[in-house]
Amino acid sequence: MRSGLSPDIARYNDIMKQFYTEQNMNVAGDWSEHSAEIIATLDYLKGCKNLRETLNNFGFKLF
Image (tube, rainbow, N blue to C red; front, side, top):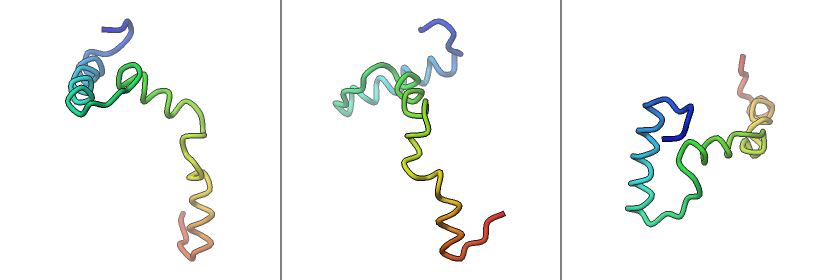
């Protein structure tokens, strides 16, 4: 277990490692590392930051 991880996250890392192995997925690092890298910057939103404006333009009034 990596230092600083909660027991729940460490357990989920183990579960996902087994899943990745069963699915023959080549994922660098463990689940928590992979997930943290994905959301480390706003790039992960891939345009979602404009979602409110887009929905408003289509007539959906969000509050």
